View 1: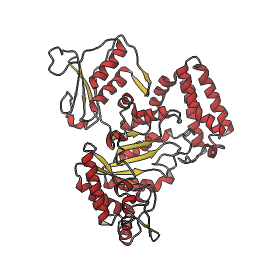
View 2: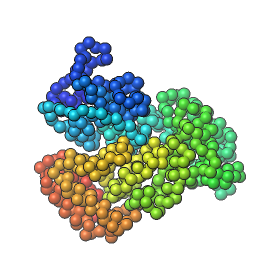
View 3: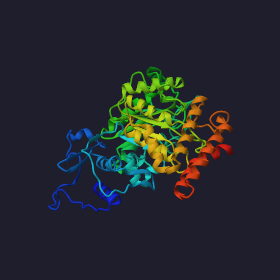
View 4: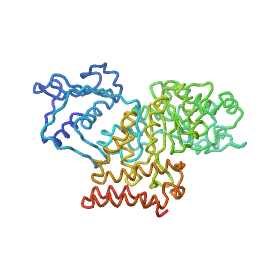
Length: 482
């Protein structure tokens, strides 16, 4: 697959179709691209440092060696080479830039790249496009938790593990006691040994049916109705957080399946880490930042102090953390949501605190505010949190908006500057009316529209570029109507 991708794009760049040979084919000769994955290949460093997705690109003796880790590394090595050394750009599904070059001349290469995050998900349909996913080095939930035609166990799984319609009538004691009453659709009573037994039996059955799935979620339902029975409350008090009982339960499950990774949530009432129990090595903690103001970086926002305390607390007891972050206004996907300045510092902060997996929830689909740019930028930062953010944004704009790019950038910069100037609270459940006197004031909307008028005038004779500019303008139109 990796060799075929390289062959295809080299042909599109140069018009030359290079043959592909296996290792022992006598027709293979120097100079050549030599593509291989761990444990084979040529790399000046031990190949195991590449882990699953890292890669090594090195030139030697007129050959270029692309060596990948044990997972997707060899494909990422090829797409990384095409992007970083030949100028290919995969901007969005169906939107790519292929330079035409008669001659390809390269300086000596010694490039080893290893991402800090083993899971890099930017949710939405973009990553369902296979070649886009390869170039952007993104995963999907399906890559880890699901199979075709099977929804898997990703998050909020208590009702799947112990279905209330099956057990509640005969065994209400399996379910949470809330305000003196057992409730079927709250949480489970995690101190009840029968609940643990049923959970393990259900997972054993599902794992037998889906043996290739490595990640399984044992996680709370999406509500605050956790159990208040005497035994559960006693453990909660001892642990200083309901996360303690949750973790005891999840650890017990994980010990039954040492070859799997069991994921659970640190979310809402379980966000605070426990005082006593620590996660087993095959337990992944999924920490959620749902409550935060998106105007400021997490490391600096005074309102994020409790989240930082929890984040850093989990980082001290686990090296297996997944961060579920939010970059969109759920109630109005089209609303201008100027948080791009927070993306890089937040990812750097997460990495510092042992986050090795990311789920970036920005609902990236055509029409959502700057969906293509946001997905592109996040993919770059998930791979390398220290990349040059401004250079990435400018490079994307140049290739995606063409001559209109400078005016789109003027809009982008003013939008963010005005939001920060007014210290506008960015709420993921807000609406544009909340900003009607700040960054979406009548005066600012006039300025934004003037920028888009100029942008459209520069690409009016290119239907593809014009459509992209008009899509970028939709959030301003939506704000005016609201």
